[in-house]
Image 1 (spheres, rainbow, N blue to C red):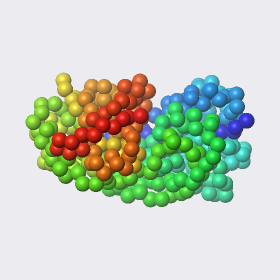
Image 2: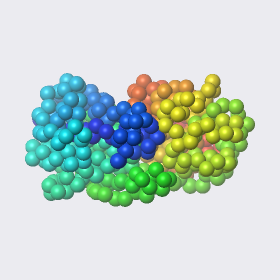
Image 3: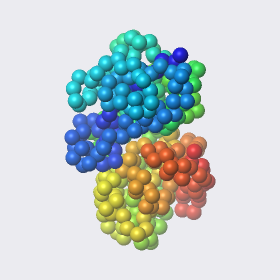
Image 4: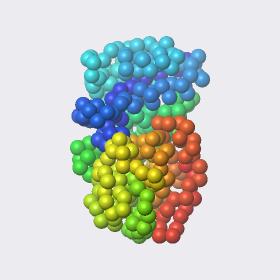
Length: 356
């Protein structure tokens, strides 16, 4: 019988779709902008894929929204090891959950959140002097660390079937600096993680020269009448610069016919700016290959379904990635996007790559 400990950070990821680039110290602001919890649904997706091995699994959870509710909804009868201190959950609750899992001698800690949650997990394990393996179910805005499965579905399968582990890094960034356009990762811990092909790599920042590519893309945008939704990242930020405006390098900007319709936009701002024909310009995350679902939650399924998608990247970045991935939170849309794509790499050059 495999013992799994599940803890959910119920507020993780709320800031992404409304353009806050994270939820640290921004929960109330996210709620004011209409954000809804994202991580509980991610937990349920993972548990649905774990159900195939339910007879061989003993599931431990933290109380209420931190795992118990999601486990029951997915058809499990979990062992509840503790309850959050108050109505608003905190990192202290996550750390207590990990200590209780260690005391229960679980074989794997499954956590739902982002890099901040991963740091809390690592800190609690270190404090307990434990080497229990961990696996992240991606639910946050910042998912830079290499301890996460590529999708919740993959996490459920890996949790049930892994047979060996390896040491991997947990990295985090300062969200206030991130909101200001600076990205500097800091190594915050090293933990044991199941070995599997469907674990993501650490995000690589930067990806080679993009000047000619950006100029070519900007020229085409100037000559087109569509509304352009320009995603985050250094590659697309170079396009914004070539278009002649100071965009939000880590946010989404909407551009049409020489004007910026929305700057650092949330999902609702983007939807309001869309017209009859719309094009999303996005670049995959270096090292990981995610086109949607990591750091660009503003590009929601509703936005994607109303738009054409133009993927742009330098040749150096694509050489480092290998394959492309999507994790929009909408399984049907993910399946529609999983096909061969023509990635623009220069003025005329394109490369065929598959989204898997």
